[in-house]
Image (tube, one colour):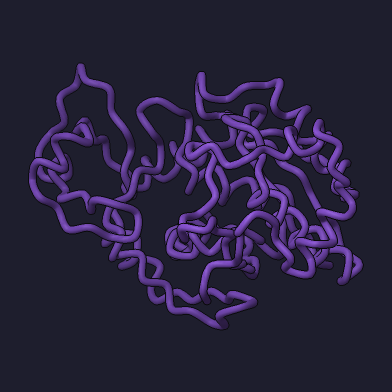
Length: 276
């Protein structure tokens, strides 16, 4: 059975890009006679606003979507902690007290996830009194799990190459888990068989594939859809003030019509799909 999901973070209102992602996931599940899940990813500290989760539900209902809601990330902290402790005990994680500024001052190589960590704390004991993140020793992990592949419904079978991202953070200093760890564990717990999300997360998938291998988790397929961009070619984003679905809803727009326009790729206001 196809089980896919829409997993927004309540750190800002949903916009048209979120609506497109939700419609794509919903329709993939329904066409296959499967399940469409809603998961609230609410572990981003004070940026997570509980009242937005209810607004998200109103937005999805306004679009005419039907869903099953699964437990929010804030209910799963013990699961994240247990997985991190297991990886730490097995020698795959190490403490890192470096700040972003310290890393960037070294002129690091830039990978798909940003500045590639130079491994400073892997070769010297981290300062015990400073806040520490937990990083994945990627070379050691790959040496143990061997070559990995994953399948994208759009792009086909891919060879996982997570080394280009370096030793990514698995547990943040300011949160109980990184996106990489939390999303990977959540998708397994929710029996997700098709991870539907934007192509901006395509390059994160090899990291998730490594975590699945290390933690003996089931391997889903992925569907990375194209992103919506504005007239300047920039991705729609909360931080750039893209018009919210709540504003459209409260202005009296027809949500069912909007959802159908998204399905037909008829986007309003100079918005379009990014080039393939």
